[in-house]
Amino acid sequence: MKNPRIKYFYQLIGSHLSILLIALLVLSILFVRYVEDFAYKDKAAELERYGQQILRELERPRPGTDLQTYVSLLKAQNIDFIVFDQQSRVLYPFSEAFPPVDLTQEEWGVIEQGETLVVNRDVERFENTMTFVALPYVANGQLIGGVLLASPVSGTREMISELNQTLVTTILIAFAVALLLSLLLAKLHVSRIQRMQKATSMISDGHYEVDLPQSNFDEIGDLARDFNKMANKLRQSNEEIDRLENRRRQFMADVSHEMRTPLTTIAGVIEGLRNNMFEEDQREKGIRLVSDETKRLIRLVNENLDYEKIRSNQVTLTKEEIEAEELLEIIQEQLHLQAADKGNHINIEAEAGTVIYGDMDRLIQILTNIVKNSIQFTEQGQIYLRAFKEPAHMVIEVEDTGTGINVEEIDLIWRRFYKSDFSRGIGQFGLGLSIVKQLIALHDGDVQVESKKGEGTKFTIQLPHKKDQEA
Image (cartoon, rainbow, N blue to C red; front, side):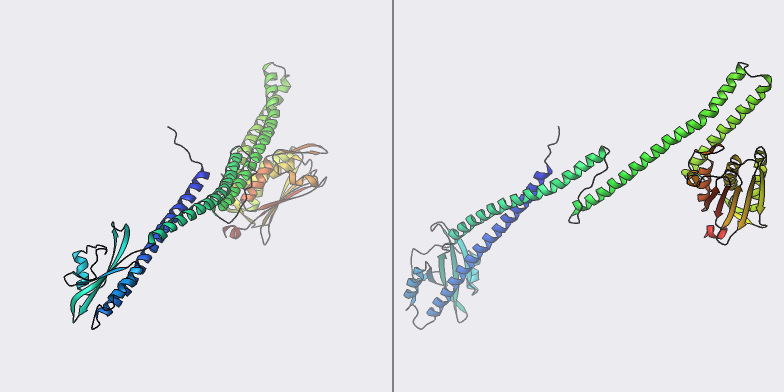
């Protein structure tokens, strides 16, 4: 069975009105009790004053002379009194009209101790609440008798009844005003919550352009501010996801394009070899072409793996002090044949004792990619590898005398698979330079490119000293 739901709007109104009603009822009861007690105490004090006057009259040499005067005076104020002895017998005046009162043994004990007794009793005969005050008459330390006065608390019930009516009217008016205010406040709070609910629905539907009104007035305002922060972060995350998705699509397109050419070449050569379409002197050339294209594919896959490892921080550098001349000689040895195929010569210029602090394998990878790029765009020229020390950092330079790069394209060569149309043909950078830039960044270094079209290109790598990296 589905649990019944009560809207928050009605919960707010119900809580406001119930609290107000309970508070008014409690205050009304306390106020009525206070007024009632005050009326009874006021009547008891009045009777006590008259009782003391009667006692003073009894202490005169000829008591009773003016008691009749008190009878008439008090009767006019709806007050009756009797004078009794120590055996509780009525001495004056004897009247059946006196309200009967049955004092308990404990109450008589109060009188016998010489203390004033005040009693409030409901008397059915008079259909009213009576106040009785008994004052002891003590002479020579002995209780002789006393005076007992009785009077209805006249008008008290009528006053309390009118007070109750006034309170009921006041409660109804306050209830109506509270209902109106509760409606306004509940509507205000519920509307704020509804705006937040609508914003939540928009976010769940993928719309992150929400902006809730903020305030420092209450917790809902704080919640709105936090909600806006959350929506902004979600929007930024969604934009980043879109950017990554676009980059992924572009990456897939670039990789597919790069792999299509060698795969097409390999497939064509294999098909030709299978069908004996090549002359005997062309078969070796076809096999060598397949081998070159296969190596190109392997290089492409390896570069992609390296690129993603670097981007996802999966590459850990093992830094050490490396002789600069030794490092440059390794590059020269690995690439001199490739350079010689295009009529280029690799030259080394390194200061004696120059030491570079970095990861040996990654530095070789950096320089290999840059030098291969220089070989690609240089024919019958020179490629210079230099290393020297400066106060702020170590410097490695790779300079060629090739075709150079247009100034407006220098910042673009770091992009993956960027291709440039030079006067001599299409220049392709692949992933090599993208990997170079990220590996240099992992070394806390920097790379700059200077180039003029037709005059060659110079790559300048700056790496911090060991003491700076360890600091």
